Image (cartoon, rainbow, N blue to C red; front, top):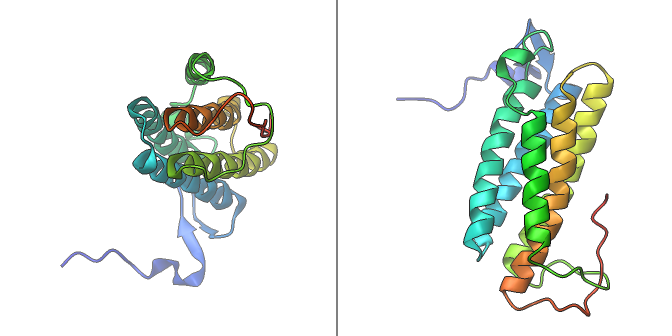
Length: 186
């Protein structure tokens, strides 16, 4: 029988792509866990979205975040071997955000999350992504990662989540130009 546990982490340490073992609360694992939560929140949003285009985008982004986690989990000396988040990926997010922006009208007042399940999930994903961005910046500032495109990717990703929420609400008939502007944390 296969066991999905080892018990090796019961001492509060865990392995990483580097030398030795680190405390589970190490800044690297805070950043890694936050990116993992962001990906999981995108999975929930994908499952609740009623818009096929959004589902496709979210799946691609989840794949990007999975690759990002490998680089975040690495010793900076080895991270280059696993680098997939590049300036081109950041540009791709900008292009997606611009394309979706053309499909929606900016709201004129604050949006309250939860008008639709998909919209609420996208809003939650945006907030989780912002936390992941903060943890990754902290890791980068400590020298734990050296790829500035990871921070830029997460920054652009939260903006994309905002416009995807608007698209999800528009698709569901839940938003009109008279509704409010929610801060997208730009």
